[in-house]
Image (cartoon, rainbow, N blue to C red; front, side):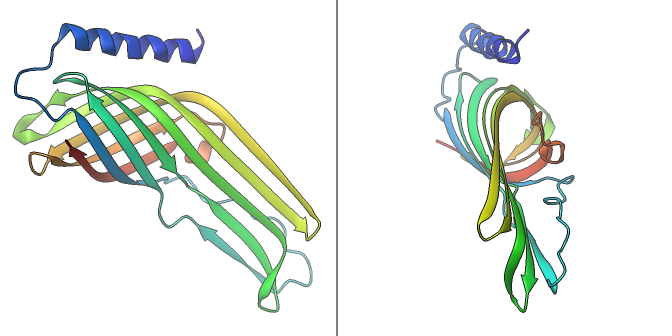
Length: 203
């Protein structure tokens, strides 16, 4: 079965479950926004090309911040849908000569946009955990400059499943803290596993 059809069935099942489990009275904070910082433990940066003779060194850089921004809507007390964008990770490599940039240069950029259905399960002391299932659109860009007049760029765009396991704890009536593990299924293995920490605001 095509993964897009499979995820569509999951989202339809979530909506059906929500319709059968109406929103309890008194719950008015249906919308939420979230901001998380993501870490990709297996990401080691773009592969370093061979440094040519004449270069006195190189510089490498990785993303310092990889923010994950989300917008959610509660269908009822247990089910919700969320859309989010993950910016990064990215990395670059530059050979240097006499303190200035030289060639070759290479760069990797990534971003992922996702739509998921989430089911919340209550735990003790206000904690809860939520499995999430959906689809992620990945945009991966690879660029390599071998000299000032010769460069090549390769872009990969794909839609793949995404799965998340999240734990959360309310701080106030509107604010909560959450942490999760997310598994993407892109063609770039190093960015397929991430952990995130951040806050969510309900309104």
